[in-house]
Amino acid sequence: MMSNFRLHLLSLSLLVGLAAPLGAANAQASISSVGSGSVEDRVTTLERISNAQAQLLQQLQQQMSDNQSDIDSLRGQIQQNSYQLNQVIERQKQIYQQIDSLSAGSNGAQASGGADAAAAGAAASADSGSSDSTSAAAPAQTGDANTDYNAAVALILEKKQYDQAITALQAWVKKYPDSTYQPNANYWLGQLYYNKGKKDDSAYYFATVVKNYAKSPKAPEALFKVGVIMQEKNDTAKAKAVFQQVIKQFPNSDSAKQAQKRLAGL
Picture 1: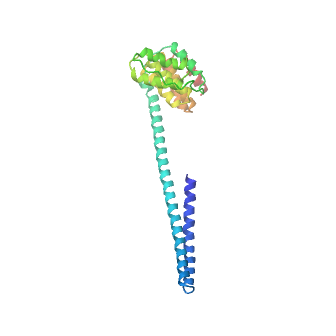
Picture 2 (picture 1 turned 45 degrees about the vertical axis):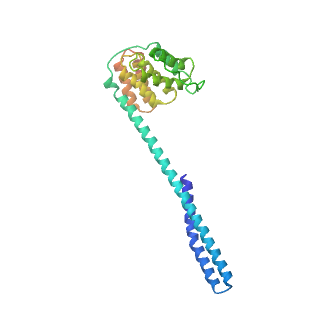
Picture 3 (picture 1 turned 45 degrees about the horizontal axis):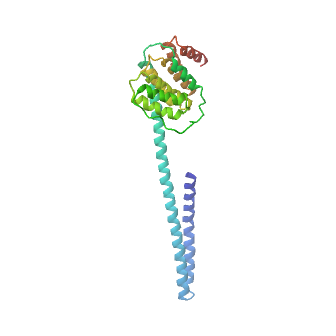
């Protein structure tokens, strides 16, 4: 777009530059012809000069109109890019605020992984590049927290419809905030986003598990995975702090052992 804009400006400048000598040449031709020839010939010459000037003016106006259109398009693109950049910055801020608040918002509960943790491990090993097998929408909610949760998890483990599962789980965590499956649902969302390569969203949901459900069996592994994501994002300082917190907060967990290994390699 910018290249076309520059070409338009160059064309405009060339046209303006050519207009003066053309006008002068035509003027000289008309002056030299005024004293000779018939009146009809002189009128014809003047008409030809006038038509040429009118055509040149029309071309200049068209060039100006095209340039204005390019400018308006560039302005719109700049505004859109600025909005998207602001959205990314705000999302990053929320992620790091969530991670920074883990220590303050968590108590020292210790727990081991449960059946859902094993299932989440199976989801982690699934092919993250695979697409949904069908385009079916997420199942409608029934009003029963357990039934809807199981239906959402079935989209992951049985139907491999990961995008639909994300939609279903996001709707579920909003509708059933008091359910005992909240830490599980948030953990699933963290794992699903991680498999899709959306690490910021993944870290957000894993951090939610630790911050809001520190006594859940999911908390140690969720906190460990936040550290893994920070390490993969090359934020070594943040990764070390998270791994150290895993060891301190959940010293007897498998996640603490894995965190110790990660720390040794940093």
